[in-house]
Length: 251
Image (tube, rainbow, N blue to C red):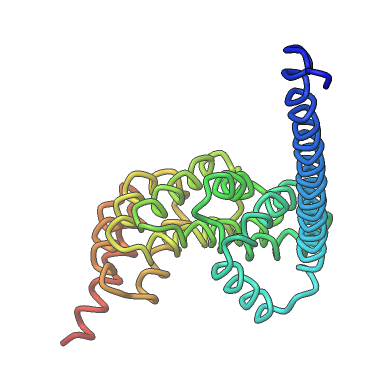
C-alpha cells in the first residue's frame, strides 16, 4: 500500500481551493461586466433622453413667435407647474433673450420669461433689454420686471430701469411702463419714484399727473402731492388742478 507524503496531502486541498477561487473570480468578473454594461446602457439612455428633451425645448423656443397671446399664457402656466422641464428651458430662453432671430420671437420670449423672472440671470437680461431701441421690446421687458416679488424688489428693478432716462437711453414706451408699474406697486413704487422723478422731463412729469389722475387708486393723492411739490411750475400747477377737480367732484 502506497502512503501519500505530507506534500501530496497538502497539495490536494490547495488545488481544490484554487478551482473554486478561479470560479468565483470568473463569476465576479461576469457580474462586473454585466453591471458595467448595464450602467453604460442606462447612461446612454439618459443621454438620449436629455438630447431629445433639449431638441424639444429648442423647437418650443423657436415656435414662440407663432403662438397667440392665449397660447403663450398657457405655456407659461405649464412651465410654472413643471419645474423639472423649466430648468431645461431656462438656458435656451436666456440665449433667445440675448440673440433672438426676430423681434416677434424676442417679444414672445420676453413674455415667457414671466415664468422665470425670479431667476437673477433673466432679470439681468430684461434690464439690458430696457435700452433696446425697439419700443415694443423695451416696454415688454419692463412690464415683466414689474411682476417681481416682493413689490419692493419689483420697485427696485424699475428704479434701475429709470437710470439712463435723463440721457435718452430709455424709449418713451418703456418709460410709460415704468411709471405705470411703479404706480401699481403702491408704497414701494412711490418711494422709488420720489428718488427718480427728477430724471424725467417736465413734459413727462405733466403726463404722469394726467395718468395718475385717470388711473386713480389708493396712492393717487400721494403721487399728486409729490408732483405738486415739483420745482417746475407747470408740473405743480397740473398736480394742483387735478387735486382741486377731484375735491370739487367729491363735494
